[in-house]
Image 1 (cartoon, rainbow, N blue to C red):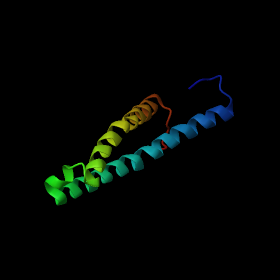
Image 2: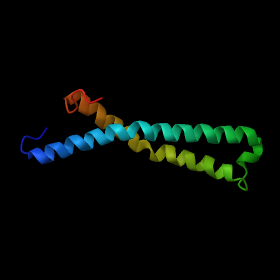
Image 3: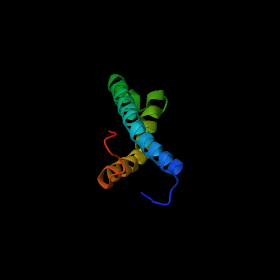
Image 4: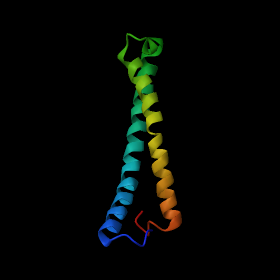
Length: 93
């Protein structure tokens, strides 16, 4: 922690860390559930689900991109882990 920060800046940093922690879980769950739903839709439609004429095919491609874009959640995990390791977070989990 930077010792030159004002109390307001320290409070703002702590709030930002807390928000990073609370955002990670619902974000991960939403992507996971979305993927499960699309996978079931593909199972129901069989081979037709992979055809470009079918809207499920687009959703299947989009969820793959969403999972890649959600790599930012990996960064959030690293930041949260570093915060726990270095003592940023003191019993807030």
